[in-house]
Length: 95
Image (cartoon, rainbow, N blue to C red; front, side):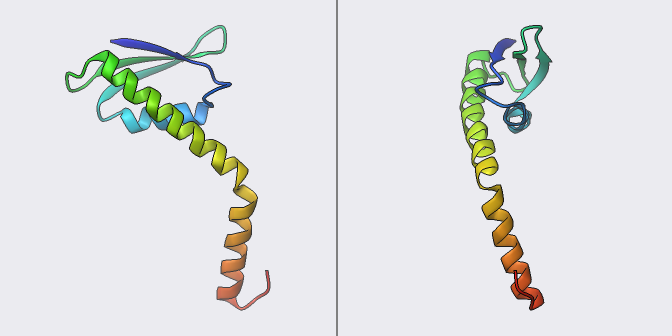
């Protein structure tokens, strides 16, 4: 078993959940919010991997998914405009 505490100001909750889901085939993960507002993740291997190996993989996934969440939030307007333009052309209307 291995415990990691995550600062939600660094890694948003959505990114933490995505990273945990990504690692779920390899580990059981208990997610708890501490009294201080941090996110505590308790990892237990499903396939015999060491806790430090799982923690390392989870930390990398946290960075990956935090970046994805940040990019998604920054590009929402652009993505919406692209969709509107694509569908308006398909439907023969102007965006």
